[in-house]
Length: 401
Image 1 (cartoon, rainbow, N blue to C red):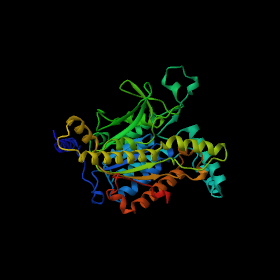
Image 2: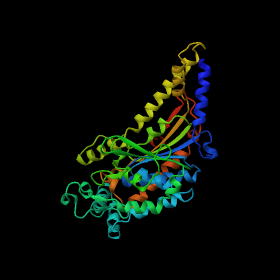
Image 3: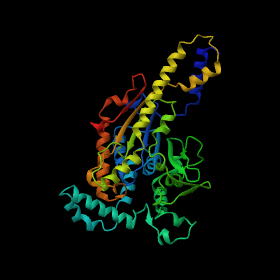
C-alpha cells in the first residue's frame, strides 16, 4: 500500500472508531472533547466544586470527567446529575460533610483567629483535631473498637475509620443510571493492593457498571480508610500512585481536547523553615503528582509526532514497509490539546491538616477560591482557541500571575 493510501486508511479507521460525543457549547466548539480532571486532596476538594460552578455558569459542560480520591467523589456527583442539578448537589454534599460537632462553640475562636496567621493556624488545627476524633458526618466515622484491638484479618483491623456512611451519601446524591449511561465519559483511578498496579474504572473502557464501591475505592487512603473490594480484588486510593488523572486523558489522542485540570496541591513552594512547614511541603510534593511534568511530556510527544509526520510526508510513494508506515500513521494523530490548570494555592495558616480540616468556614473559603480562580481563567479567550504552535499543545496557568 502506498504511503498516502496508508495515511488515508488510518484516518478512516480513526473516524470510524471515534466515540460519540455530546454536542458542546458554541464557546468551545473548536474542541471535540471538554475534559474535567479532578485531583485528590480531601477537604480541599471544595475548591473543585467552586471551580465547577464557575464553569457551568459560563456554559462549560464537560463530556469527559475523571477524578482521583475526593476528585472522584466530586466527579461522580457532576457526571451523575443533569446540568442545573450538579452545583446544588455538590453544595449539598459539602454541607453534609462539613458540619462537625461543637461547631457553634468554635465561633468565638474563629473571631480570635482573624488576628493573624498564627492564631488562625491554631484554630484550624483545633478543628482538624475534631475530625480526627469524631470523623466527618455522612462521610466517615471512627472505628470502635479501634483497629489495634481488632484481630488480624478482619476489615476493622486495617483502618482507623469506617467509610460506610459515604456509600449512603453517594446513593443519595448520584444517579448511577445516568452515570453509567455513557452520556458523559467517566473514570476514576485506584490502586490494586495485591499487584500494586494502577487501575481506572472507566464507563467507556470495559467497566461493566460503575457503583459506589468504585468511587469509594478511589478515595480509600490508608491507614485512615479501609480497602474496598471489587470483583474479588481489593483497592486503595489512586493517589498512592498518581493523584492526577491528566495522563489518562492525554493518552487518548483521538479528539481535539480542552481540559480543565483542577489541582488541590501546588507543586511549587518555599523551602521549609521548621518541621511544621516540612510536613506541609512533603504533602504538596507527594500529592501534586507532577502535573507539570505530565504536561511537559505531552508537549514533547506532540513535537515528536509532528517531526515524524513531516518525515513521512516526504517519503516516496513506493517506499514499501506498508505495515510499518500504517503503524506510524496511527501513532501520529495530530489532535490538539489545551490544558487549563487551576491550582489551589493554600494559605500559610492552613498547615499540614488542611486536607482533613472539614470545617464549614474552610469549606466556604475553598469553594470561593475555586470559583474566583476559574472565573479568572475563563476571562482569557485564548483557552477556547486551538493551539497554533508546532506541538499542537498549550498549557495555561493563570493563577501564577
